Length: 481
Image (tube, rainbow, N blue to C red; front, side, top):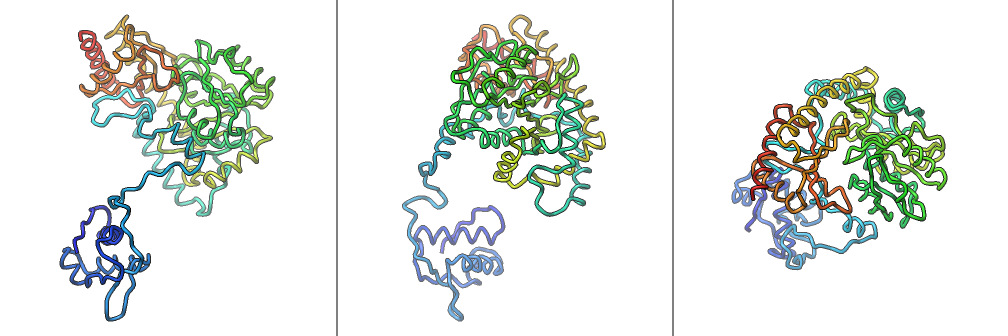
């Protein structure tokens, strides 16, 4: 019997898969006797216990039957897998409307902002500020939480200690007054939008996103079944005069630091948006993803702090201020929809990991979180300043910088570069080990000019200076061509 082990995992599991493969492809027939365990072990160069374990697994799954004194025999009515190679799944049509929409609107392999392997430098947005002190502190918090957290299922709404810490943080930092009863702990902004769509939207309802926008939020809404309408952003934020008729059910906005342009929604525009939502019975989803870091003044108060009619659903995340792998965020619910939101969260995953929640609650209560924010703010300001200086010194009038004086990235527009020239520039950068990221994927209607989304949190000041030098070289070379 010819068996090919795949080298993945324990030997007994590899042998089990190999035996299934020859059975399912018809290489051996029903009723055939498997080789004796000692003989097969000798042929494959493995221990007899490995073969015994594989045979026992096949018996447990009903593939073979053991006969005392005779050996193991194949039992199922096996048929070749329609000419497919072992393990090659047939591509089936979507089995539900949800799956059909998911295939239509989302391509996991084409998600924007992913780094190219092997690059020396990458202006990648979403890469966290790395801080060894944070890593050590978080390891201690996790160890303590793991030792003292109860082993049963976590509360669906989130641990009371973390919800209280979030309330205290929002009141001090973002001007949002709320109670722990109105806070829902989620795994991030993506889940916050998913449960919001379940609670507020029917299939076919209209939702508005900014143009440009965070594409994941648009896709969540589209996969849910909403009709998504992108409305332009100007220097003051969402252009309310362009809102569709009839009024949308939900508006997704990033008012404190618009993604990706960095625009801050003006006070007058905020008040107009709240008035519009109250008059038309709309809901406003406020994504405050980068509100903590501002470099010229105190962080602006959140849109939710101005809301007097209860139409704003406020969402924040710890992914950017700590690290994305944490997968923790929070949502301030409308009090009248609290039960609906908690039920939607329960349906998603029962509740978020209690160990990480407990660790984060203690980190916030002890002052470690605030210390990290201050340290990160100083470091990010240094990196931002280095990037701005490098761009201005190296490129001068050839670029226009949209500096929002906040967050962890800025947008640079290259003068006289259309989309095709931009693609050549990005390709040349990768040849030299520099990963550049176009702003175009964040538009439904991309402009025919090159804008670069330049994240600076993941590089040191020295690396930023080197990367800017490479960018200048790429621009010179592509202009010459």
